[in-house]
Length: 272
Image (cartoon, rainbow, N blue to C red; front, side, top):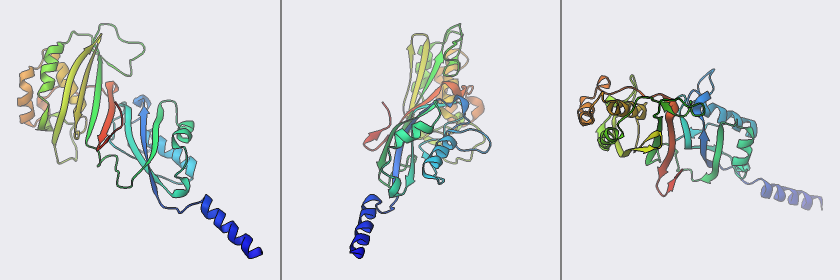
């Protein structure tokens, strides 16, 4: 009888605690980047990755790396950043969206948490990323969106900006539109779409590409703004691309108007 009770006890434990095979959890994370030094963990300064990993450590009592689709810069926001982490089977059935959001600060939110195959990688499995940049184009500054829009009081020609944006589409060497210095050797990117639209007193630039160089979107935006202000002609964009010289392009837009909107994968997209 004692042997049977012990056997039953072991059987019940194996049912409650399945094998500790690793499971990957995929997240969609939304955040206001104002108070953070970007996504990537850095010593002595707050980052999105650092805060998420610290929250995970409180839950499972061990250091757990969180990998993201892209390393957004300091002050940049995200509507649908994609990230993932791995846990053993004993932790895989938690409601990760609920437990993480209870610990995360108000400016970081997990919108989705789901198990995904171990062959998924947030960065290397991605097909495209789409960014949106918002400009407030009126004389008065905003008291509400000061940290989420680039305020430009001068009148900008949206038509000229639209003409410039079209010229970024396709496969190009974007050396002229990256922050220097950088360790990235491959400077070829394929821009799927680059558009400028007017929404009331806002100008919105969206760009989707297979990959981006450091601060590439912000330099594209700054150059389009210089086109809209009449400092650069839209027809010169092709020549600037061919020059492969950062000094030939326009200014770098500030980070607080930039949003990572979504990341696309085969058969799946993180946002709208």
